[in-house]
Length: 318
Ligand SMILES: Cc1cc2nc3c(=O)[nH]c(=O)nc-3n(C[C@H](O)[C@H](O)[C@H](O)COP(=O)(O)O)c2cc1C
Image 1 (cartoon, rainbow, N blue to C red):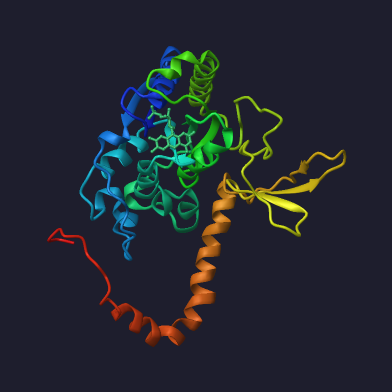
Image 2 (image 1 turned 180 degrees about the vertical axis):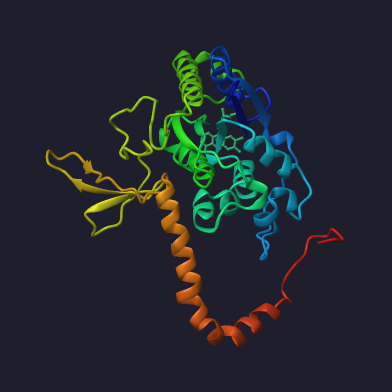
C-alpha cells in the first residue's frame, strides 16, 4: 500500500520554505511515498470563532459555521499518513495562517486524549491515527534568536492529533527569494528530513512518539522535543520546556548549565500528557468554576451589556 505524505506550507509561492519542502518531498517520493503540497496562503481559511456549542466537535470541520476551505484541509490531513509543516518566520514566529490552520483543523476536535476519555466522535470514527511528522522553520535573520518562536510554535499545531515529530530543521539567514538553494548545508538537511519522515511513514509498526531521527546537537536542552525554549523562573532549581512542559533540573558543575530530565510521561508529546490535561480541564470546569459561577452572574451580566464603546467594522454583516 502506498503511503501518503501531505505537506502544508505557510510560505510564499516558490519561496524559501516551499523550496525546502519540495526538496524533502522529492526524497520521500524516491522512497516510495505519494506526496502532496498544499499552499496555505492559497486557501480561504478564516480565524476560528470559538463557538460556545462547538459544532465542529460533533460534526467535524464540515459542521463549522465558517464555510471556507477548513473542511477540505481537515480531510487532507485525515487522509495523510505523514505530515510536513513549514513556515517562514515573521516577527520571531510562524506566519499568521499557521495559527488559523492550528485552531481550525486541530485542537479539541482532533484530540486523541478526548477520544480515550469520551470515545471517538462519529465523523472521526476509525480515522484516528498517530502520524509521523516533520517541521521546517525558515528565518532570514543572521541572529538565531530572531527565529526563537518558529519551531516551538509549529510544534503547537501537532500536539492534539498526536503527530509525532521525527525531525525538524531551523533555518536562519535565508532571506531572499531563491536564496534557499545557495545553502548547501540546509539543502542536505532538507533531504535528510524528507528521508527521515518517509522512513517513519513506511514503518507504521513503530511507535514514533518522542522518537527523533534528526540530528541531536548537544546544545539543545530538552531531550524530548530537542528545543531550548525554556521557562526559567527565578528561585527555582528547574526549568520547564516551553513545548512539551517537561521539567529539567539545573546544575552548573563547571560553570556551564547542565540539565537533568527525569522521564515524564505526562508531557504534551505523549497521549498520557494530553489525557492528564483533559482531566485538568474537566476538573477546573466541574470542581472550581461550577460551584462559584453564580457568585459573579450579576456582575458578568453587567459587563455583557456594556457594549456602548464597541466599535464595529464597516461591513453590513459585522
Ligand atoms: C513580515 C515579515 C517579518 C519577518 N520577520 C522575521 C523575523 O522575525 N526573523 C527572521 O529570521 N526573519 C524574518 N523575516 C524574513 C523571512 O523569514 C525570510 O525572508 C524567509 O526566507 C521567507 O520565507 P518564504 O520565502 O518561504 O516566504 C520576516 C519576513 C517578513 C515578510
